[in-house]
Image (tube, rainbow, N blue to C red):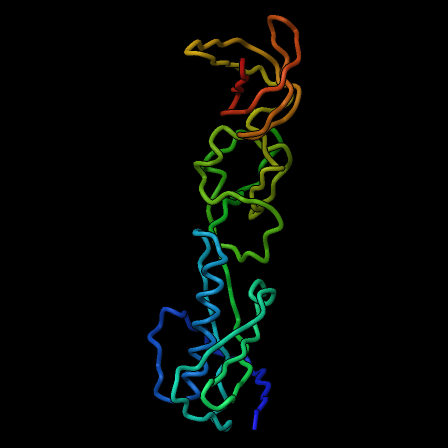
Length: 231
């Protein structure tokens, strides 16, 4: 007879998956199967900067878990793997027995945040910034993982201590800046000056005015106070 048991008791002790697997009892084997499955699937979906802490619920020792002649198998919906709590179906193929186990996933990554209050227009440096670990669920936008990525950037808004630094809060070239416009074609390199007509981060294309011709052109931000155009 197919047995269906919903097991929703979340374990109290946080454990990293890196801990040795203990198959000393079928209860522990069920828990390990659920934890291993979620760890491997979420790892495949995560970025390299993300650190995982995966915790599986304790399996009540009062429940009758059969010995399984083959390893327990586990599965969960793809949508649930993006959540902090994942319901995993652990099965024994040999006898059609299965159990639902709750697995808690904590994903953290390094994030650059402001260390002190920062005023608009401030050139950012490592005295004002720090790197902390934050849960992905706390982040609402793209962030930076290293202070070096922000070299030459300025704040566009007032930043509070602990606030994650997001691209929309910065400009490497800010509207009204005197900038260097450079162009290259067939081994020919040209530099001239101009004025930024828009804010931009590295990689953005913005409007700039050529100081010599007064013409407006589109240029790509390549570094602080410098843009490039194609000719």
